[in-house]
Amino acid sequence: MKLDLGCGSAKQAGFFGIDKRRLPDVDLVCDLEAGIPLPDHSADLVLACRLLPYIRDLPRLMAEIYRVCTHQAIVCVLVPYARNLRHMSNPLLHQKFDEYSPRYWTPHFFQPPDASPCPPLDSYAEAEPPPYDFRLLRQEFFYEPAYRSPLYEKEELMILKDLQLDVVSEIMFHLVVVKKDIGFDELEWLSRRAYFEPPCAAELREPLKAAD
Image (cartoon, rainbow, N blue to C red; front, side, top):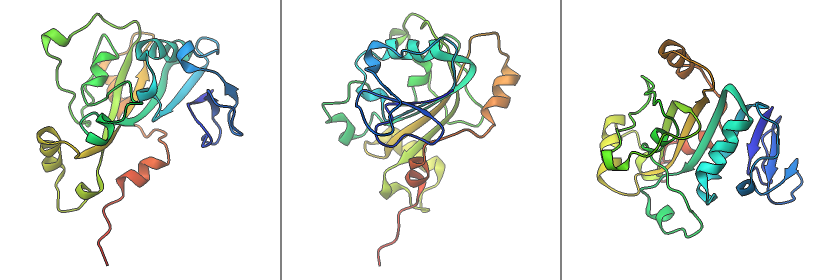
């Protein structure tokens, strides 16, 4: 089963859509804050597109996603980037996400060789290991239009995003659900595969168009 969590009126084709609103494309109306009313190990692909920041109890929902997923299910998460004033000022967003986030979703962090780095947590920020295991396979930054110019090299953008606000607009993670033993070589192989992503990802990569 493929799940589109918080799908609204834009459910992805072939997905089972869940939303708290009764809309034409929604297959199951429920409040995800209260859980996901589906059997254990029933989903092999989960899309959470711009949903997670609105969740008040994120660990609880992450535990529910983990429960309904099969071993090696893929979870695609697209969220607003934390260090952006537009998102900081939004009172509806209860959660913040950046390149540190994946370290909080697993007791055994894996750094994909081809992904931008997730810096280590400070010792005081380390928490108890979570009751779920989502390993990072891919991480992508989507930049504000002004920074999508070919004038910027990737390395320059990586430095800029750490030095100033409003460089990155959103961030996307591809995670693999781990419920059994899995080795580094297998994780590395998984990190190099192509995976589903929401259609808006292509739009977020489009370079800034020159003025006429």
